Amino acid sequence: MKPLTSHVTVWIDAPVDAVWDLVSDVTRIGEFSPETFEAKWTKGAKGPAVGAHFAGHVKRNGVGPTYWSPCRVTVCEPGEVFEFAVGTDTVAVNNWGYRLSARDGGTEVTEYFRLEPALPLRLYWLLLGRLRGRTNERGMRTTLERMKQVLEAPGSDGKEEQ
Image (cartoon, rainbow, N blue to C red; front, top):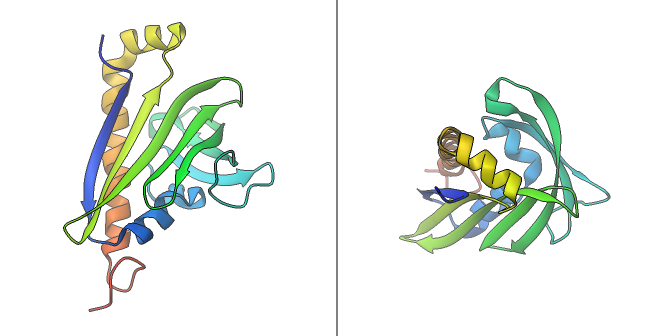
């Protein structure tokens, strides 16, 4: 069976701190993701921290259905890893995250997803994994490339104006 996970890595010509500020600000995901068109901090959360809650407004496959997904930050290591679980506090369905590392004067950023290994998700992955995996990989590449464009633009937080 294909693993219940995948990732995409892109190098961005911007410092780790600038990339971190962008990937950990869930309120900006609508600028980049082809499926999640907005997100907001919930349950009193004001920013990234382990246990912070937010909701992502998703248009599945970019066409629908449209729904809100509850999320909770599970790993928050500034400049290194930002990860969150999709689902309730007691039942996570999927995990998404970003790993950052300084490389060649910029930042190597890896976006990844990991389905929980519960039996229903294993069956889903067995039946639809190839299609959904490709969709997720395209979406992650699109998200990271759009972030790259913003961070590498002259005058952005990531680049000095030339």
